[in-house]
Length: 235
Length: 228
Image (tube, rainbow over all chains, first blue to last red; front, side):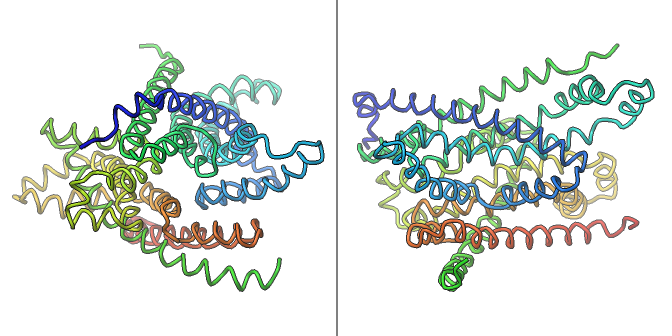
């Protein structure tokens, strides 16, 4: 049974897949950073119950976490295509600037999804900080901003790390969905290779291995960060 | 919002709703059974069994569902022994069957982790007491271990159910016309992107709301001994 191992090697598909993997990692990291920013902002709003904003945040997180990621990606891509084409035409560009545009929208879509999950993680982490710590800081007369910087933020970061690990794992897997709208990331590279060599098995198998490598390596990284942040207590 | 469009979109998407529900129920039924078996294997003293269960959950939780789906739908269809075997071809040859298979295998991995947590939370004394009463291994599992584990694991399992519902949307990428498949088609036909998204989104939220309510009710039923 010929699965086309040789064809993958000969046709230079390995480098295409690795390039795709680089885009997947870049997309995952960019979305995770923006998602974490959204998460900290929205998580603080949800925790402190800032009145009108908390309703907006609730609406955002329940929509994004209840509706399939694919549908959100379709919404953002299809609704932006026309708009971006118009803007590009107004500036005298004919045709879209391909991958750059797709990458930007992909980051927006994945960051929106990852942000909604990060919000819940941050809110949970904030809720896990013992109230006594904040009360004690107030009793010492420390101003609010410094309470946040010295008491709340450091504990929140440490408690949120395991949750953020989960969010990262889902985020990197969600990036595969963007392939359906044509961004040349790992999954798309495998799809193109599978189509043109007619050997889908080997291509998707390699793609699965690369994703597995990415998730396992990053899992190790998060374990290391967690150990680093563990509070040093007296024995 | 255009009323004519709503009349066009709602019946079409409702047709997809049925298929989404069918995909969810089938894959959850298969996935829960597999997940339970994997969780028990994971906790068994047999090294080979527990490392198989661990490897299974690492692989299926470490790769995107889309890759698993494409590997099954496009990849396995390429293998000649799968094509020549009528039973295997019945499973692989159809988009909806493939989607159920991929979703069931995927959710089994997550379910096994959730149930493992539940099984590990059971105090040893309870099992020892059951042993002292002379209960057989199977009876002990049925009467003591499983009911307590499921009670512990139910809130987390509710979240997993929502993820399965969302996962069914990927079936649209292998020509299965469920809600997302119909929604994508309508988006490219009518260009009313936000409206179609809103209707499809409401349908998904509705399914999830019903599921979460059912899980909450079951949870309340299982913890009815607790003071309210």
